[in-house]
Amino acid sequence: MGGTTTWERWDSLLPNGTVNPGEMTSFNHYSFGSVANWMHQVIGGIAPLEPGYKAISIAPIPGGNITHASARLVTGYGTVSTNWRLTDAGFHLKVRIPPNTKAEINLPGTDKKEIVGSGLYEFHQLT
Image (cartoon, rainbow, N blue to C red; front, side, top):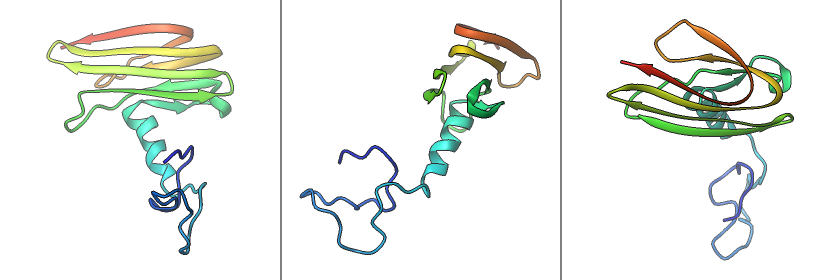
């Protein structure tokens, strides 16, 4: 339906292009945004360590039936992205860290953390 933010209700814009005349019709409402935040931080593993994502935590948490995911987050410094896959061979992670930032990488199942600067990185944790 062309939305660029989370709407207060799923039917705020009707299929014929008109605005729902009912109560609570907002086209910029955060109530469902907490779900997107959880998906970025837990599934995608992208979270701020400093305001504005000057320092970033990369720590995806695979679980349930989710065996792969990718996430992107646009920050004031540029785009942070993760792409991970869990296979029989292990955990594989690709990360993009924007310019003038740093990231703390923490792979699942380990307490080891690696600090990296801006750039593209790949990490593999074999089973």
